[in-house]
Image 1 (cartoon, helix red, strand yellow):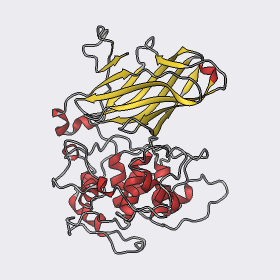
Image 2 (image 1 turned 180 degrees about the vertical axis):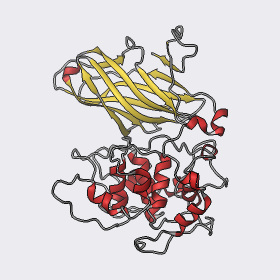
Image 3 (image 1 turned 135 degrees about the vertical axis):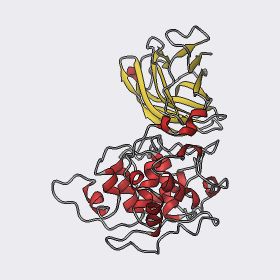
Image 4 (image 1 turned 90 degrees about the vertical axis):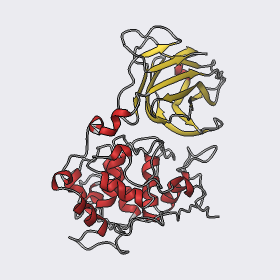
Length: 396
């Protein structure tokens, strides 16, 4: 049975009008405005868009599928990937709609890994598939992404990005690419401006551009149009008034007894501004990591009852464990994280603790200003070596 989009209301068009506070003066502000006016993207708390933070697979695919199909999101099942377990997450339906349409396949182990960043090659492949842009057969010796790059060769995209397959896209990049591909953009917002309209159905002929692209070009000075895609977020004047981000980590007791269960559990709370939790280092408090396999960091749903998304896979060295993640913690929305592992049958209990012997055992950055949160205070101790500690660990 097909499932209709139960969460389309999550992708509401902005009713505040005007630009996001943090896109004023941004070289891609006009493209971001197009997606906003059409209801394809929405801002964060405080009328922010966060244009220059990396976008992950879940965010990218949701924006792509809404840009192509609007609210018409259907899928044969909302649990089409092996990591879609527990309470349904906001991106499951468009991800499964994309899988049904052949836009995305997932990883060989059957997972989607929505929290992983997305590079230019992956993004182009998905966009080409979603808009049904013709793709030639792959030639001998070609990289897997070459036919998809060839499919967009007559658009504006290569002139701005070249063919940098590994470049990690930001939220602003996605807006620029979607507009300059010259394909039809859905209109989820009945009040969208009639002066920036989607092109007629069907692919544009070579050498032509959509009315959206034409409107964008007319609104940009030539110097802006040729601006590099990476900008210093501190150059945006509106960022100056945003408080420095901080992150509170509080450990939670959870005994590991075997099977696919948490061997560490903690909450993360952001203050000042939304924060990206970007890394953590652990050591074994009991047992040995040699008895653990498939170790991963998950971010639970807000009700704290089920894993929402795997945000990182652990790298173990002896009884030390490192994660490099990119998980958003929004102000006012504490999140629960856990380390999951498959424990060898009959092995001793394994639990983890933060590796406080490493001065950088926690990493985080501000989601708005991109500043690293330096200094870690442990259980109220002095903030050694730093004027301020922007991360605090409370162990229970």
